[in-house]
Image (cartoon, rainbow, N blue to C red; front, side, top):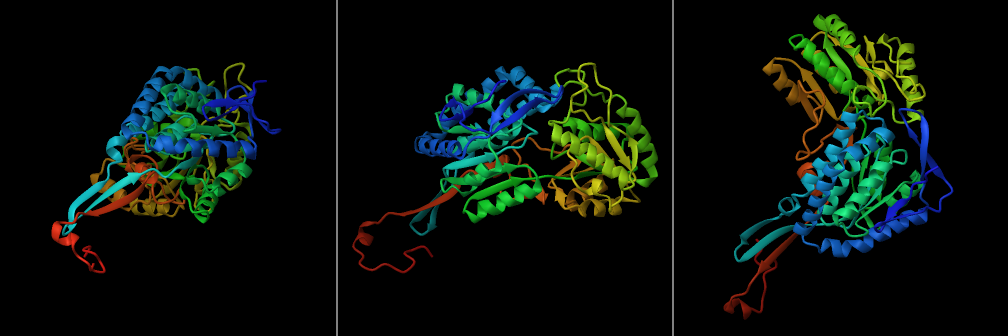
Length: 501
């Protein structure tokens, strides 16, 4: 049984813990190794290493930091197939989905490479007569990243680490305890790229050790991705301890489908958005709000196209729907499906016990599942399932559909399928969703634009990615300077505002 190590100060170390997490291959259900629940002392060691590395890294020119990340970007390209397979084996994403996961880590690194320009401040000569003001952006110190199971490459090494270290900070990553291999391997690549020891440190641990991170005075900020209840607690505790925090949380994304949509293409987009990554993404399209005039046609076309959505091992390039990542959540998804039945929703496509290739019967597979005629009082239509389960809600028109969507407490993304420019504009203007798709099922922008969830899908002021990321991982410092001429050098009195008004 392979036992993973933790990564601190540029080397992998054996944990002294007595508590281990079993790691599984979700396509087979087999145990493939164990990850340590690092001790409190080991987490403190990671924080201390990050703190010790900070002064020298902060004083490394932004251009040099960017060059190291440029080396990393090339290593991610060179190791694409290896990293893709790691994601397939530990997370269950299909090959193309896993390759995209790694590709998003590359994209986040490319954003970080722009640090010399995006960290630039502002200046104004003669802000007041004879007084010049310059604003700089400077790093803060040690940041912590708390990572979920669903994107082992993109979230820690696309959303968190690259811009953090590009700005001159150091980082302690709490990798997902059930999917840590990809993170550990990319940590190795950071070292190979030339990142100094201690700038990136990676541990796996429990909520007890996370509390240590949240309370530690040397940790200046927290970036978190996970559920809303946990995210809210982390945000509150980080704030109570004087830390900045961004908490990206769960969602219940809806799409409004109007009668003028391109029906077949719309259905294909919905299938990709609802069942891609086995529905285990905070931008999954888990509800569609369909205009009644085309609802029956939509459901018929949906059932027809779903027939080609096959389940199978993640690394098989013919597989369209991979497994749920771990057994406990697999059982929770099945329980949610049963709850939808019990609440009276109409199960039109049942994904329980899907057909899979021989040898994979013990994998955590749930096939594409569809509920029709879901009403507001049903839990399955309002709370995140985080699995390949799609709910259909029927409405009379645009206004009813928009109001129904905006009534949901989550607002990561929202989508409309229509050929009407008028309704597309009205939707973009009045939807609560922070990321809006017009005939785009997963409206996540490229990494140069912030990932901007709203309402209970996000807690904080500055989102990840884009210019927001640079603002989150730096703080402003303004410097006002004034130089005396010969006459002023002789002055013996100074005005209260000293020329600043």
